[in-house]
Amino acid sequence: MRSLSSPSQLFNTTMTTHGLIALVAVSFLLVLNGSQFFLIDSFSDLFQALLLGTLAGGALQVLQWLAQKTVPIIRNMSALLETQFEGWTVKEIFFVALISSISEELLFRALIQPYLGLWLTSLIFGLAHWTGVRELRIWVPLAFLGGLFLGALAESPLFGIPGSVAAHFTINLTSLWILTHKRGSPETS
Image (cartoon, rainbow, N blue to C red; front, side, top):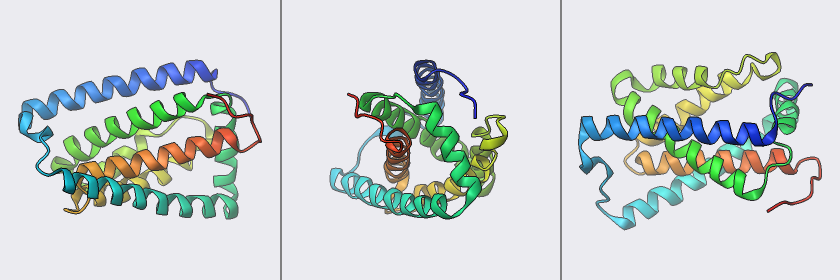
């Protein structure tokens, strides 16, 4: 399988794209809802949402790991993605997981989902993960299902947007970690 781009090019493109997504989402949320949207009512509620989101994201990762072990098309997708993220450092993994989870949750769950609903927003979220690479075509329905999961968390009073961000961060962080350390690659910092 071929590499889509160099690791540094992929990192820079991902950070730039998700930085722009975050800027657009925050700008629209400020215009539509004002600054009160970003106020924290209760730090204990925020901590609870972040903890529950992290646990929910971890639970979904267990299911994803099992699917990768048993479903050939998912195993093939992972093999291709391993080549894309090979050589990423711990810092790159962390920052991409962080910026992508925050930007995508603000855009899809906080900005779009209240207007288009859970199902349509999840469909758009799935389509946003289309790469045009045949071996990665399974990523679209998997992202759609992930969008339903994250969207349901965002609508839950126990989780809300902070919980969906925490779940998304956990999913991205563990996925990237597994992909970059699967072939016994040396740990980088």
